[in-house]
Length: 385
Image: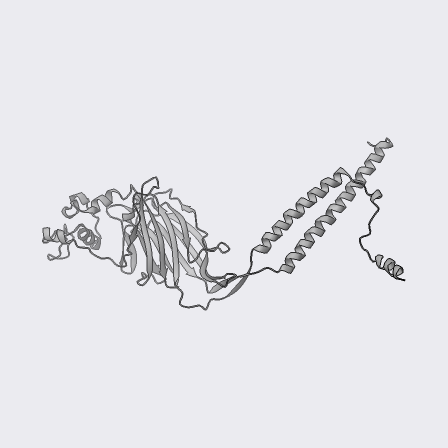
């Protein structure tokens, strides 16, 4: 009775075995077996790598967050304009300069080959035009002449900067600095001589309010006339400045590999037509990234539209030379969440790989075996060809 039950139970075997005597080993079968095994190993390793990396889910919703500052990280090289003639200005969407912001900006002087000349110096952002006075020069010159640019007889120009400021307010062209007494012993004469003989690297970060705005790097001293932001490049003309630049890095927050946080890294703006105005229009999308350990990173992704145009004169409506970045904030926010992958899903994929490769290899081996046998049979009968 027990033997009959065992025999009936054996009928359920889906993997019936053939006798060893009826098994035929072939070279083509060995090649297919080795190839199939290698394919299995490669696919299993690929699946293991996928399993070890977290699964990232995406969500899109309206941004209702408040209170976060917008951090702008940048590292830009201008290889043909010295640091003394380059300024960085930041403004909000209304055109007003950012008056309350934290920043840590440095400038590094470079030679024309791009090699550093000295250690970087921290840059203090000037938010309004100021007139500096040197006490030693005041002691030496009681009331220096403004060379005809004074508005009244009591106005004195005791420093080289005072003379420049007086000419700027008059909107007159500045004469040769070597002919101005206050500028003969002043560092500005040396700075002017080196303006086009050095390069500059500007890097660091700014933290501004989360509103649309812009910032730009351009030559000349910046000031505002009748709510219009302009740059004074005297004694030069704006057309002599080569505004070629290299964006080594630009991001708005923490860098994340999985997100598009720095699409402009490595981009070079090449000025082939003299003074060129480079414009970058950035659309910023606030982003939250949550890691497996529940660490929350606040950053921003952005897309960019680039445009450039030659400019002839800084006073014309065509613009002024430099690199200008305008950004807008999207009302939507993207949320990335890292999640562990299922072990059951991993096991299912491994079984699918083994079974699929084994089955396909078996079918291919069978077709090849029978095709070769049929060909050999025709050869034996003299019917081949």
